[in-house]
Length: 448
Image 1 (cartoon, helix red, strand yellow):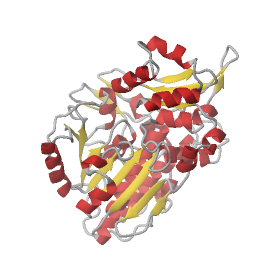
Image 2: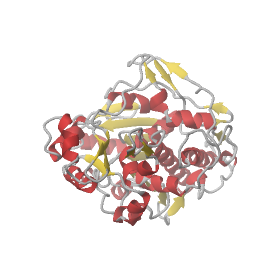
Image 3: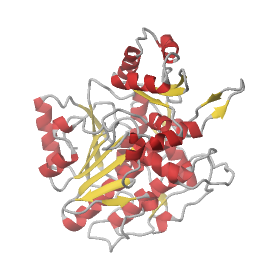
Image 4: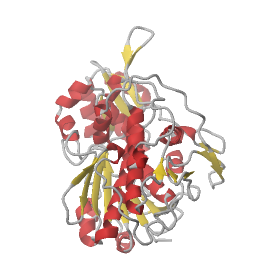
């Protein structure tokens, strides 16, 4: 398929021991391959090194009223322990509170002294037990020898189960996606917005899931994102990932909201769920329950640790998966004082790659529905994406400098936005977002 090999630009642009560029390009090509299956138009969706690199750093490139986005919170990051290092995540206030409680710390400056009395595994266990977010910095061999590391390696990158069919696997570069057949009637009336008329219920947070639904919105889908009012999204993160969507707040524990959600589901086409494994089952929002309710739904779930293994119900983030899976150790460096410290990928590549994979899963399921009348379910995780990255052969060429991103601008209620567009072109013309991020919570629980 043309989209899998026609990238324009250098093959390597980020320094480091892992082929992050291969992961980035491969995930975007997978989305392109899914679009070509859906539209029946091979070779119509392409990417480039510059487009992909910019999109994977969308938060770093975004300016809101001229300012940069807020980075990691002060308590997030690597901290030394008695025998090594641990990675913390405390960007959300409730995660910071749980972290402090787990370490019996009354203030942030007491966190590091507390961790220095523990091994990295003791700190990890204590913080996880209180619902906080942390992972010991493991070597790759240590991760592979663990039960969770073994579980993360199982199955394909994208596990796809068409309704009434057998599970199939999709890999990077669209491997496993069938070659497109002849276009179906109405499949490609507007190649730049092939998902026009598709309704997507967006039950995702943070980066990976919102990146998936941001691309679906750019392709013409009507995307309604729902957030819990008691745990609002970080404002800058919301702006970065909600171009072209609508935003609602709803406590799904309230019977009236559950009734409205059921009404939404009756006419939805896609549901994307980005919460930890099983956490929404109490609202009948698991993949099996949703498909039983409406067989035509395409249901895509993504989370940090997958659906198997001892951590399957734990919270996690890209940076935490990097630490656990041996990536932070691989990017470690010697300090000027003779010590050593772990490092990180140049961008949140696990999040973004998983997001484009999730978009590809949704589009592939919609293509199946065009032909059979039924969709199915897709499943991804950051931990499985980390395994894809670590399995890629090392690239020995020196990094090359890319041209400046092709910035776009548009007004919004948050101020003027300078942003980078999606990493795909349709028939040679780069995609763009249909509109700015909406005011947070500004929509009701209804389709437009």
